[in-house]
Length: 235
Image 1 (cartoon, rainbow, N blue to C red):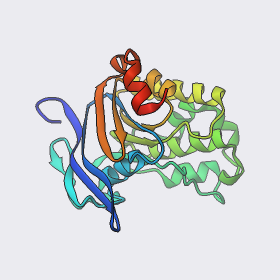
Image 2 (tube, rainbow, N blue to C red):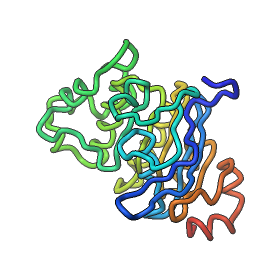
Image 3 (cartoon, rainbow, N blue to C red):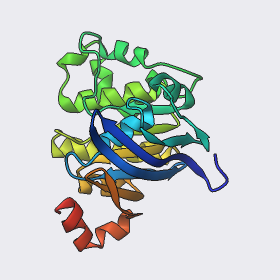
């Protein structure tokens, strides 16, 4: 960890897909144990920012640092080995494997998160261990995707649009689970469009608009600023 307590930091990320520039000098930082949201409308660059942190898309400029050490040129495998866990927007569970097998695929590293602990966090998965991943509901698949990533014992958990497509009752339950992870000391970075969901779980927020950071502040400050919410989030 750095002297100022920062665990994960992105500095000046520029990302391109072919000739199209998607991120413009994007910077953000997370202290250990903090939950931070990247908010923005569809296409703002939130998912790309997470992929750049994870090494799934190489930035044309800028760098990502974990405990002050650059992850420049890192592959997703190296990022995972350094302690970054990633739950993609598409969840990407293995549909033909059972829930139990999906969890085992994610197992990595020293003892910490194991099947017992993830089932304590997501008890709804316990009676589904023998079910194929592809037969689960959207909410069950999201729980499985997070549980599988936790089996890798990450220090930082990246969640890409975790509430997308889920029923309100499932979203509320998911928020409770994320709060439990935060209480355990895990550092969390969420990409989201759902302000109400992130307001429950996140301490600070960055708002992206057309690939640029247009706002940074405490979640409480954003909730009290209707002009910023209307202009950047249309809420």
